[in-house]
Image (cartoon, rainbow, N blue to C red; front, side, top):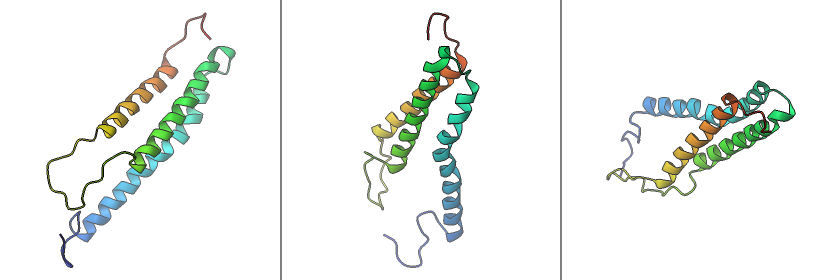
Length: 122
């Protein structure tokens, strides 16, 4: 419990300002990044009938990354703790699943840019 005059959760006022500014500066690019990398991924793939499925995969992968980022930012399914909780760290299996999803989407998007398809596949 805090009383008036006590430092806030992050310490002194100047440190709270630095923490909030860092959160904004690091958080905004992660929300905008999928919108930026969509055109670059589409431009890096050759426009031909052979690569249409790759372009569709890139669009679906980017949309999945954007949705996953929005869900993670909203904190869906993450249990809320009391503001003054000072116990042991709480493991959130939902955040672990989010991390695994980021890894899978990232590997799929990199593979769609770097792996060359076989001749018979479209």
